[in-house]
Length: 326
Image (cartoon, rainbow, N blue to C red; front, side, top):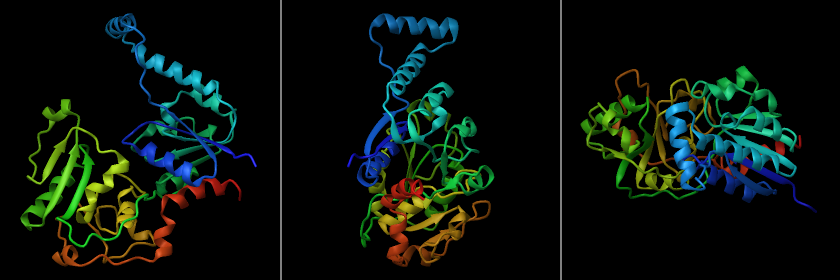
């Protein structure tokens, strides 16, 4: 029997695409292909580089970006037909490219790993998709998207002798005030903690805040497939939601796979079946932080295996594929 064909189109962003691609390869039952939508164009010769230099200065046009888009259009035009084309960050494709893709699959799906509030451009061209999957409950309610949870892809046993009580891995963005607030609390309470904040090296001069010494800046991104290793040596993961976020990020699911406790400022988590006050502490960052020391010292409580398995990447992939068979 001939396998169905699946095409996954996504940007290479923190390595998320690699993890999801592996999930489709391992669990979709399809022949899987991948296109990186933000692949950079390489100059063919020095004259192209010179041409683009003057174009940016005198015309305000980046010919390198235009050539990258033209190359992507050429690639998708030449595609065979697929049973599924699944796109993450469809806002990175032009309408022309999306219209070409509508003729290629039986099913054209969009995956939204960001809310419309965070990336408003995602609302463009949504009428071209047969299904749109979103982790954000509010976006799903207001726009008729299919609500789909995020997932974990690594399973580990509890590390009973971690070096740190709590760890946080993030980027320098609007959440930074909350980072400072939490890590100041940890410092005052003498709780062993560490944070790594990714920022472009060229942007460091813009940082005006004063940080606790346990917060360090890094200039090389830790790929998503490797980020779990940072959390392995701590008892608890800190999760900070973006403003107006209504779904759960990947951190709570990573906590399930790694069997870690979680501190979060996202009250939405209390609606989920894996919520357990012994494992998860919800903080209102608009108020003074007050987390009982008992939470840092008590052990992780195992959750029901059926509940934990539900959020594994295998079931996430199967939901997308099986939904079409309903």
